[in-house]
Length: 198
Image 1 (spheres, rainbow, N blue to C red):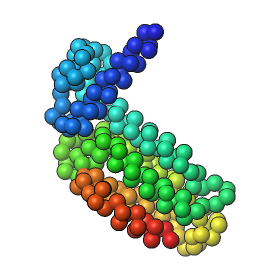
Image 2 (cartoon, rainbow, N blue to C red):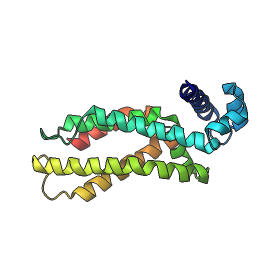
Image 3 (cartoon, rainbow, N blue to C red):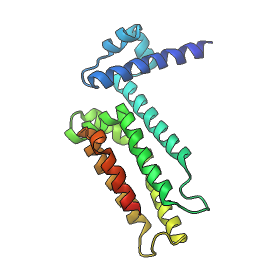
Image 4 (cartoon, rainbow, N blue to C red):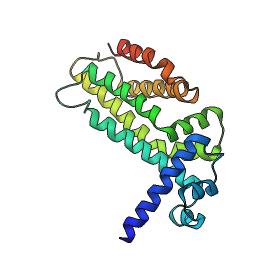
């Protein structure tokens, strides 16, 4: 029962903090704001979290875990049946859609682009490493599978393939989320990836 109450308290604090960070940004949201809006004593916040950055970090970690989980569920791009262009296109479309919905991750991308908060940048880079390593390996495996089934030519190097895909997507994240252009550019992005994959 005690564990359940603690879990509910943490969830309530995180839900309120997510809303406040999304509406006002990390910098303009204080622990007092979170305590007041969640109807908790400030001490309750510090009992459950080390501080505002710890709350933000948990929210970013949750978003990356959600994105990764949904992308894994989407399809196993490197199954023995081979790789399909349609699955890769679907992956790239869903990936950006999920990043668009991840409001805390979008704040970290914006902070990195505008060099706003070194604290956010450091935390974001640490959290992102796991996702980046997983996705790089996925692209590497896609390349090897594509070569195996002769969808890709033998001169394509898996390391370079994974590096380029990852760099391309990160550059697009800046355009889409730091510059707030995703909705405006979405149809062009989807057409371009279809063209690129084909």
